[in-house]
Image 1 (tube, one colour):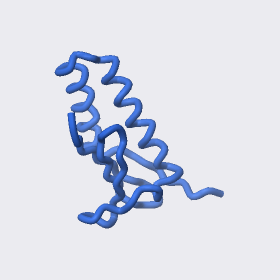
Image 2 (cartoon, rainbow, N blue to C red):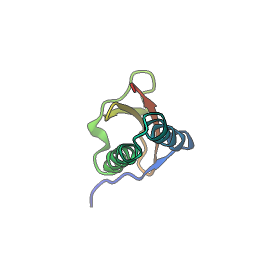
Image 3 (cartoon, one colour):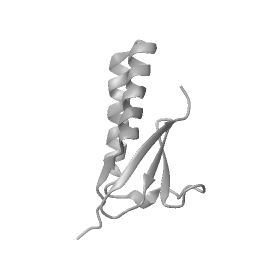
Length: 92
C-alpha cells in the first residue's frame, strides 16, 4: 500500500488559476495557450498526490512545500489527507 496524499485547491488557488487563464487569454489574446498552461499546472498539482516530498520546505512557513511549475510558485500544506494549494505568479 503506497502513501498517497489527496490534494485539493484552496479558494485562493482557484482564483489564481482563473487569473492566470484570464491574463493569458484576454490580455495576451492567446486563449488556447491559456488553456494549455492551466492544464499543465493542474497536471503537476495532481502529481503531488504521489510524490509530495520531492519539493523542499519553504523557510517562511515550514508546513508548506515549494514547487516550480512553469514559472508558477506552488505552496502546498503538508498533510496526509489533504493539501491546500496556493499559486503565486512569479513572472508574466
